[in-house]
Length: 128
Image 1 (tube, rainbow, N blue to C red):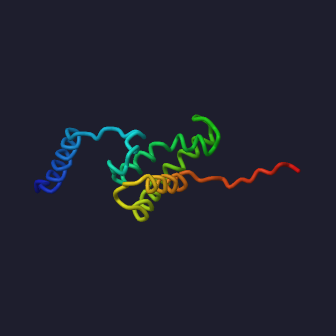
Image 2: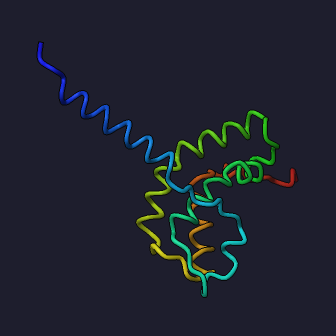
Image 3: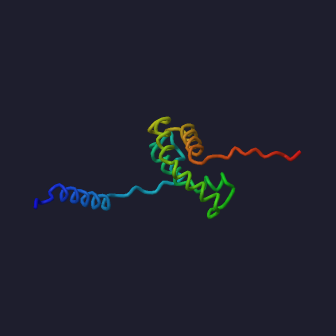
């Protein structure tokens, strides 16, 4: 029987990658204060998008007017997370890679929120 050289090589490379990934420095979490002064301290688009995606539960709470744990909120979060890849791609195509102004940050944020969390379009009448 022939020695499985290719298999051993692939498994070894995968193990080396896992070990390398665990030892590298993890980026610090970003909070909203990071986006205060974009003119003097611009940020990469991916950082803004990643931070906004972490805000999905809060967006869903506002969109559904329901607190976390309710069926409507849970469905909203699940649907938004399912759309996140498509929305990320759309933001990549529409916005510059460096966000250096409040206007670009605002437009990116609003566009991504609208992409992630669908609004019902429900019109409430006064009943008259």
